[in-house]
Image (cartoon, rainbow, N blue to C red):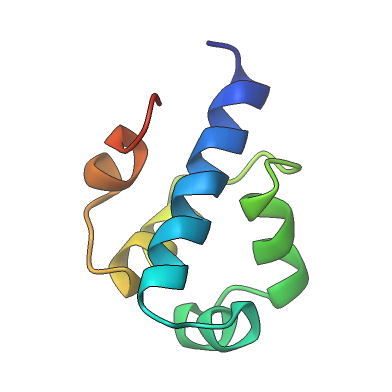
Amino acid sequence: MDWLEFAKEVGRCIIEQRGGGCFTQERFALVSSVDRTYLHKVENGEVNFTLRILSRISRCLRLSIYELISMGNV
């Protein structure tokens, strides 16, 4: 799996987990301290996100980074 596929799969998992918690993208961005436009790009696999960003996102989803990237076919 190349980086682009990986980033898109992680983004899809974030969207699924965020949706299950009834968070809008705007609200989730505020709670996770990630800029909303950047979060949008992460969810669409358009940016090379860092572990720091992934940590903020996974913490708000109440998952470890490992759990988040292990979902689906990542």
